[in-house]
Image (cartoon, helix red, strand yellow):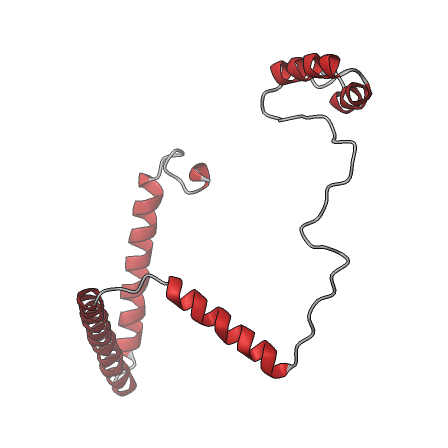
Length: 160
């Protein structure tokens, strides 16, 4: 059914709200059969009462009262936290320390390598040219390999 052929549901709901309850149920059943994605119900005919009583005035507290409430809330939330066991903490600390040391070692070696390359390049500028040519060749080869391997279904755009 095209959009032009679909009945105006809003108008049907307005008419259904003023009709008899049996008629309203029948029309709602028809609407539900037409499009089960939307849950349509008639309006209540009255305003919904809010949770707060508008007659109550909020309690005014000073700075110390608000701080006390804040820390009471923090304490109640901390009681709800599922704290890890001692074994879990030890295991996770070990993992973090090992990964940190490994990353520091790798980054230190890379830094040392580039320092040596830079020192050699200052003595003989041919090292800079050779290093740039090698990096350019590697980038070109990787780019060509990825370009020839990628089919339209494997490309990034087709996965969006």
